[in-house]
Image 1: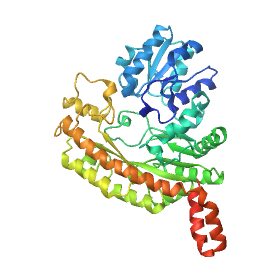
Image 2: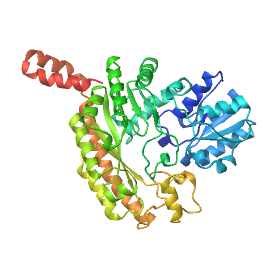
Image 3: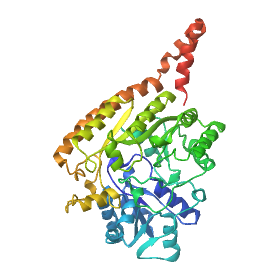
Amino acid sequence: MINPGNNPKFAIQEPLSLGFIASYLELNGIKVKIIDELAGQDVKSLLKNFSPDIVGITITTPLANHAYKIAELCQDMGILTVLGGVHPSVLPEEAQQHADIVVRDEGELAMLKIIREGITSGVVSCEYIKDLDAMPHPARHLMDMDFYMYTKDRLPYTYLYFVPAKTKVAAMLTGRGCPHRCIFCHNSWRKTPYRFNSPERVVAEIDELVKAYGIKAIFFIEDTLFVNKPRLFRICELIKNKRLKVIWGGNARVNEIDRNILRAVKDAGCRQITFGFESGSQRILDILKKDTTVGQNKEAIRLCRECGIIPQGTFMIGNPTETEADILATRQFIRENDIAGAGVCISTPYPGTELWDWCQKKKLIPESLAWDDLLFDKVVISCSEDLSCSELENLYRQASDTADLKWRIGFREFSRTYFFPLWKLPLRMYKAIKHPAHIAGFLRQMRKLKI
């Protein structure tokens, strides 16, 4: 199994999708190796050493061209080559030009079918996995966990900035799919329902990460962790019952939270939540089919602050029909609301999404488009007919400058909260014993040290 790429922007968390396929194949008696180019491993030399019968390569759209070169290398070495992931699932005909087999949709059952039935060509697709608990934990023993546990000491301006430096961190994926259909998301073309692991299974994996790797922090990378509140309440209960000392964060929609769930997750170790705010303009939110409001965005921030959780958010500019006034509304939202970090992205159409189809109908996609140009910080396609690429680039820089200020403010805030200087601890303790009036302050600082 190969995780292709050399751009550090894509090397934030371990390749869990490959990990699930690998562990499922191992469960069925198949010898597997994961080669992770994003973690700095050399694909060609490791292929020669392992000498596999089959190679499976996962592909996302920005890495497609690079992945195709690796696939052609594998074919030149006489290895049966399989391509899977989001991009081949949407464009199987294109992917077939670079490999022997293309897998559409989920890969576990499809890869096992290819091996057991001796398939050597064509497009393979299997039914989606209904019971995620039946799948083993991802094969982290085949991954370069040392690389991902420290993730470049929390690359600046990522969702991992809430994790203290030198703290071991891992990603978890406990659900597949999404019940929502935003026009820019790959879930808009998927036909599979939203599924998730049981609370017991989730906490068992956390326990394994703590014991096997010494993990102290976790980020749940599924699109929305908070959609099933009873499940999340139970996860929190089990974390507390097992006394698992981990801090964690996850993604949520603004209309999925309330005080009760926020207090429960905070008590179970949650420190940060990332919201897809997307825009400060209600008109744009409606076009994106977010089914949320600017007012709900503001209320989510307020509730997080009230419950002691760090709110972080992502925004998109250059959306369909978006004007400069809409983008200014987004900048104003970032400035005026108490978020600790803001990620601003260029609205980017990816094949298969409703946004891609809209841009195609409007003839906005250039014929010379290269897949590796489709990055969130690069203006290749202006989805807004009212703004040229150069105008959008200028507005993006302005919005990013506004967001950068929020990152700096947020990091200082987090440092003050969670990096209480330990050298002061003996002095604080002495004062608390000598002068009872200092006890309350001492206890507050000790509480901040709790993870």
